[in-house]
Length: 453
Image (cartoon, rainbow, N blue to C red; front, side, top):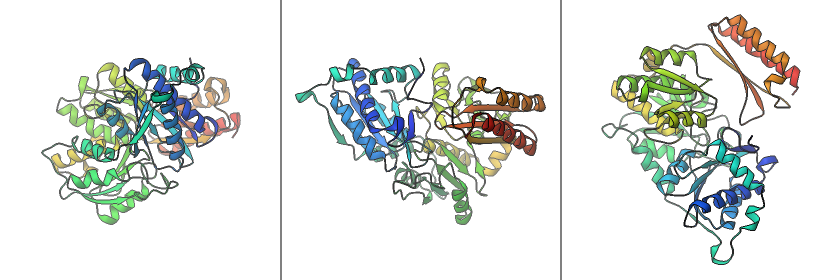
């Protein structure tokens, strides 16, 4: 059964329109609470957090109403990173957690991500069950009344609890004393907590992207626009830059020269160190089909293995749980350290990189250059008017086949629809940057003509 609302990372779309109308949030809150009531012997407790979008209030109140309408108790945290809600849901023994965020999307979008009581995102089957329940008459027939109606409260200490938790993931024998760091919180969910995490561990912190106004989240800043952070690293002569996205579940690191270090390079660095310490479970790193050949080579040199899954951090996590692995992630900067967290956490990942730098007493640029050899990779995104299955686009498929034939095994072509936006993503990887750029644009042009904008 196909999911109708949920994509690869929750429900997402233009705020107050289409699938993202507040009535949907009300039904989701009610359905989630009804499900939890069937399992729990108490009034279900649901943690709700959000990023800094102006539309966050809209969904926060709609969700609260739905949960209370089904007899649940809401614990509101205010703006906090997605991984904070995952951690708090589990640590507070709540029955579920909901994050109001569209992650790296612009402010006019929003989304809802749901976590189970174990702090993990719901599997596809559970999301399908929720969708069915939301569309049924069950919720209307089972609303409680009187003293059984739910309630809500704000947890003012939530941000401090999360800061303390993140600090515990950094080795206790190390300190960031003397380390000069630029932290870009993208005017998003980590605007308050991120500077505290690094400064309380001893670092000199230059905080940018920490003045949210409801509309500037991800706006020319953060992990999706790391150039601003890179300029500040050079200006401040910092040792490293930490660029988070709007909900802080992913990051891009900037080295001391102002050069971008993406998720593949970070995974290569962390995986090789865990392999050497014999701490990478089953000697396997989990990543997606988007990660570069360079990452695969880096892991293989240390006698490790790479397991590729579909795009989306949820699928990385599912593979890690199923097979018992402890490190996985995406090229985009979602990095999952199962020894510390149940989902991607930009600050936890940043602290693991800083720990390696401190232990080896080497600048990040040297560490990265030694561990991974860049392989040119081009990604072209094109917005089209309809999401048609690729098998129904013969001209596009022919263009893909032609590119693969030209590469002749000396590279990769991956074409897919985005799971969170109406975009076709074309990735081509190979030894010649100009050549693969031409291939990627040619495929995108054919798809545009075949589907239309």
